[in-house]
Amino acid sequence: MRYSAGLINTVREVPSEAEVISHQLMLRAGMIKKLAAGVYSFLPLGYRVIRKIEEIIRKEMDQAGAQEVFLPVLCPAELWQDSGRWSVYGPELMRCKDRHNREFCLGPTHEEVITDLVRREVKSYRQLPLNLYQIQTKFRDEIRPRFGLMRGREFIMKDAYSFDCDEAGADVSYQRMKETYQNIFRKCGLKFTMVEADTGAIGGNFSHEFMVLADSGEDLVVSCQKCSYGSNIERAECLPSKEKALPDAPLKPVEAVLTPKYTAVDEVADFLKVKKDEGVKTLIMKADEQEVVVLMRGDHELNEVKLKNLLNAVDIVMADEATIETITGGSVGFSGPVGLERVKIVADYSVQNLFNFVTGANKKDTHLVNVNWGRDCPVPQFADLRLVTETDRCPRCQDKLTITRGIEVGHIFKLGTKYSKALKAEYLDQKGDEKTIIMGCYGIGVGRTMAASIEQNHDKDGIIWPMPIAPYQVLVLPTDVTDKNIKDTAHDVYKQLLACGIETIIDDRDERPGVKFKDADLLGFPLRITIGSRSLKQGVIEIRIRKTGENLQVPKDDYKNRVIKLIQELQPQE
Ligand code: ATP
Ligand code: MG
Image 1 (tube, rainbow, N blue to C red):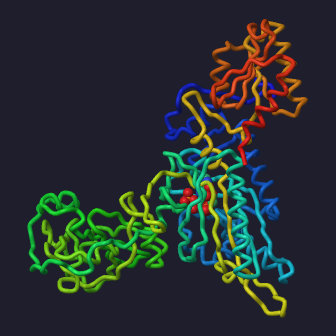
Image 2 (image 1 turned 90 degrees about the vertical axis):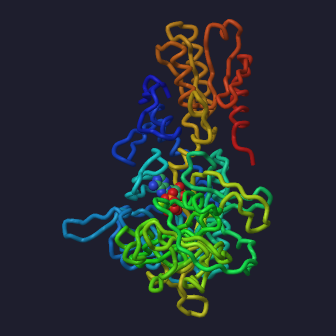
Image 3 (image 1 turned 135 degrees about the vertical axis):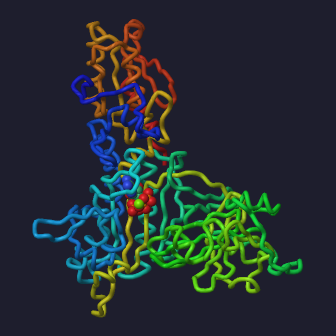
């Protein structure tokens, strides 16, 4: 590829709309261009990266016995109504109508469509197991599209679906995908961790996310320093607190105290001279339009996913002021469980053993002290409802936990019969009995993987592509194309490398060397060969390794072998 013939427009300034480094660098390198919020065009260099990631995915999926299909983006609403998701998917689903007023959606994921296909095509146990995948554009009207390719409204996903006769078979399919995903991300040159993920209404231990650790990540990853435990914070269990089951002090009489203007937990605790973990804070929420009161210890935060799972709710929001006032009869900021007889109350395990605690009085500017369960207020349903913190211990081995940010690049999930039951995907077993197919689903965000790779591999000068996904492996850079000797040598090197099957680009522009060096670093090609008067005079070829900044002077008759060897060395190791 000749640089001068390419559509490559780099810019020096950091684009103001880009918050994270991958987004900034992809825009500066001219690899993507925004069309609308969360909607991007890929330019030639950027699309080469996408295709490379896709090829790695294809190779590994094929090797695992999966077969590639290509399903429609336009999905009829009826299928989604049959599965029940037409009503629960909410505004993220891009809906549209045809000229006959029939409803459709643009596929955000394809469980319905693939299950429909399989129920029509598969009749017998002899046709199972089956794993079908596709690489295709998905649509999700994300509430907050941001970070470039990381959270788009239109994005490329690899989605796969497995179909098995029984649970044991489905577990084998799941395990195979788990290994395949590890191979894929390793072969893309990414450092990642696999963590347990929330399984929502389906339950069980069969969901894992593949996380690229990076400060810009939107997810929080909990990991143990000692054992292999890793979990998305949404799922991370909290061990029950160690406090004594019975109070060791007498229960004191309840007292109302004036706490004018103080509503925040810190302020109230300071004012009443108690610790934050001696207070119970009260959240009034709406779970699918049903009011629920949630009690947490003052120093803890609610884990909404745990609450959703406990209540089997789809949507959870804070109640509005009017609702709070109706339920508590008091003003916002001073809520508490005392006197709340007619509403569902749930509480985190950590408040179960509190006694003589502080809580809101459901009255303006007032808190109650010395409140006790049962005596003063209804005993709520206790459950694990809080977010784990770094002061918590590993639920497996009790060692220290760390919490880091991560980017979810892949997600695997054992679905069981959720979709096959709803859509009646059945097969005849050996005895001729009708059985429901057991499913799994497996997704990878292709664009998000590209972005995550940049988050992990860059420096102040630009991108540092891992060899397997670099748009070109080698850049040949003649420092002065008006010098015939330099120009001819560079073109010769370029042609020789192409003849060896090496993906090479030559910067044949009539630009100052400084400009070319800057662009080379920004675009992030793993190897750069500089042809200038000095190296020509010395009869050497200068190879620079982008990742380490190392400059190698290689004898002219040996450079091809060196480049081939370096390309091998820069591949991810087994
Ligand atoms: P998130 O929690 O980040 O919204 P998700 O759980 O909705 O992700 P899945 O439905 O499991 O994601 O989709 C599979 C994969 O598709 C994800 O692991 C991620 O890599 C990618 N993905 C999901 N949403 C987006 C998006 N809006 N933009 C780019 N990639 C996405
Ligand atoms: Mg999502």
